[in-house]
Image (cartoon, rainbow, N blue to C red):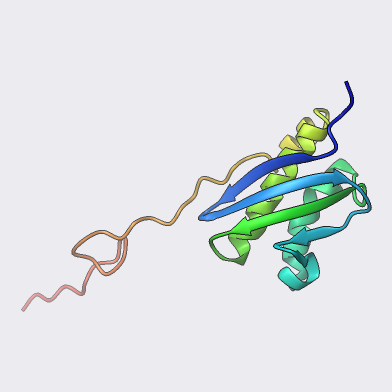
Length: 131
């Protein structure tokens, strides 16, 4: 049986959801139909997204197509990173130990705490007045 031509995975972080499609190719990364340089102008976020490729030494071997929605840029970058890591594991199961060791397969469970009634925010209280 031949290997599939495309690997897909979903990554989530905070309220961001990232659908990642990995194809063997030249290393081109497209996020929401825009090049990665346009979508993530900060180098640190681009490096964060490319980290799974660096860890598995597959930089430039896959083309990445990403549809990301919700949240802010940090959450979207981390969701995309998780999606890429999961798709790489689908492409080659031997990548799992490398990615797990680098902490790239763990879904960050932290979410924004909901606002409670009678308070201005989730935990903050209105100023107490004794008199």
